[in-house]
Each structure stands twice: as structure tokens, then as C-alpha cells.
Length: 266
Image 1 (tube, rainbow, N blue to C red):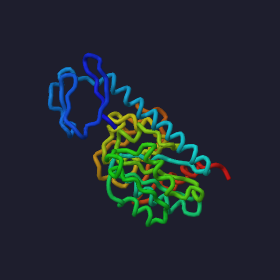
Image 2 (cartoon, rainbow, N blue to C red):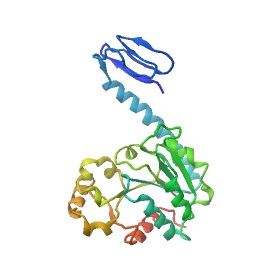
Image 3 (tube, rainbow, N blue to C red):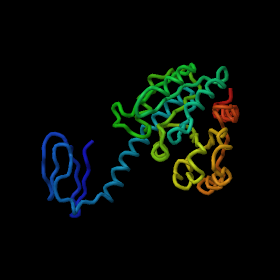
């Protein structure tokens, strides 16, 4: 993708930064794309909106295609989001054990690097399609619809009832991209502090269920869970919330039931 520029005189263009140094409209770039000239008239405001519209429009079309493919296989899909270290993988492993014999699940595993989490889930007997965003996607901090689509042919969709998409750990970007899911589960760790819904409202607002995980740590933390719940209510009135612990098993059966309720009645 080329780099977009807008200038104070209204000039708008895109070009690749690769092979040659070049100049235009009063400034220059070197072969690595570094600006080496005067950019005092440089502005990105209006053009940034245009670029985002293009990216999200294309993402939304691919998400619709993903959703249609999942539906054609009778598969329900949940986008699982959180910050890094909130315990998504441990929770998914526990869910895999509890759903065994009740629903056939597969996982799209999103990580910037490594197969560490994918290996943990595969060891639990779950079909896993790993998407490393550093490999071909530029090290993105989220999964978008195209990335999820790249994983579909590596999952046995005809043999699944439910696909869990473990998104890259990040409290901001994953919530901005529709990937073709039917529902969104946000996993929150109380170690992050009760103010997080106020600071990162988009993800909390987009979640169909917020699982407050690692509740076994609450006696050891200086965190006000009632204040967290009030902050969550402030950005997402009526938000569904569940207390869970992958370590003790608290709330995991209830979370499994929530996932099963998403499946079509047999």
C-alpha cells in the first residue's frame, strides 16, 4: 500500500516509498520513505478519514463474506478480545474441556508472534488455525476480517458448531474490526484496574459479555470491583458481566452455557 499525502494547497496523492528518492510539492523522501524535506505544510486530517473509510469498507465486505461462509456451515462465531495477559487462552482451554461432547469447537488463534497459545489449545484437543500477524500482515495488533478469512480453510468447518476467535491482546484495535462474528466476549483482568472501561470504552461498549477473569486474585489486589462495574455501566448500560477464574473454575460453566446458548436449537 502506498503512503497517502495531503498538502495545505489541497494536493492529494499516494505513492510507494521503495526504489528511488524523489521530491514533490516542496519536500522530499529517501528510498526508505523517511521525510527529508520541509513538511511545514503537511496535513493529514481530511485524507485520514478517507483512508479509514476505504480500509473499513473493504474489511466490512470481507467480514460479510466470512459471516456467510460460517452460516453456510452452520457455525456460530465468537470474537474473544482482551488486553495482553488477561487470561484468554487459559479460559479457552478450560472451556474446551467443559464443552467436550456438548459442542464441537475450533479456534482461530491470533498472535503477533509465536505458536505458544495455539499449541496450548491444540493440546486440549481443539482444531486451531494460527494467524501470526507479523507474517505477511505487518505485525498488526488485531485481527481483521482478511486475516480471519485466511484461517478458514485450515479449520474443518463442516465438523464444527462453534468457532472462537482469540484476538490479539489489545484493548483498542480489535474492537474496531468486524471479522464476521456473531457475538463478542471481552475478557477483563482485575489486575488492570477498575478505571479501564472509562479509558478504553470502545471495546467494553462493543462486548456482548464481559468476563471478569482471574477473580481468584481479588483478595490480593487493591481493586474496587463495584467501581469497575459502575464504570462499565457508565459506558455500556445494561452490560452483561460474569466473574470467572480459569484457575479455580469459578464461572467457567456459566460461560460455557452462554456460548451454548448461541448455538441453534437442535
